[in-house]
Length: 249
Image (cartoon, rainbow, N blue to C red; front, side, top):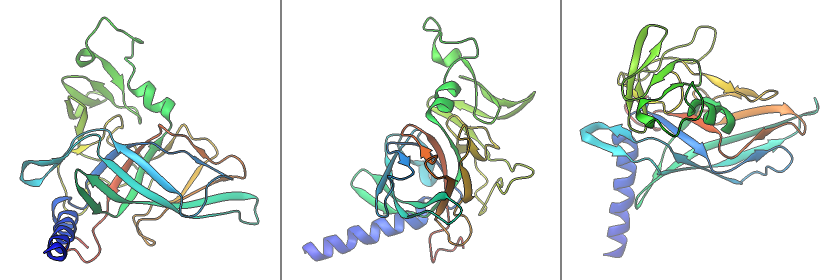
């Protein structure tokens, strides 16, 4: 009976990963771990926390606070004197479930950029409810709390209690795309703009590979030796790739 129960648990978790988290779903997370060149080792664990409820089909959701786990795949110093690390985020902890996922990196910003995106345009204001604030998303769009997200005079999404719901947009001149895998629904972008793409407030760091194409799921970062530093508290937009063998491929 114990073996049967374990088998059913694993089967359910695998089914959840493939069917209930559609490919193209964005997971807005904040790093609990730091990545610092010279100290990063292969196999090192990387942890992040989901910052906004993520709606799922059938009126389900992944609640804010769920963990997304990953690990460093490799860390090396090419002959150029730079350092590069490869990592992946491949596990979602949701209650009792440990769910395998495959993700790529759409955008990343430092803790300072995240903090600025959560500060009203008029500066810190303890006398005004946060639901009445106006803040600037990472990428430049404006978040009118309790109402909408606007790009210039155009409304691009809705403000919700713990973030925003916006359809991802492509960004000219970058590899970032809008809707993917027929997942044409608003996504949880937290403090990021609809077309947020790449790295923000991380000078000297290069995103060499985001993990959407081969090698799928592997994120490669490069910087001058001694200058690779992604601090704890940095914000990321991870996008779920089609699960291997699923119909979304």
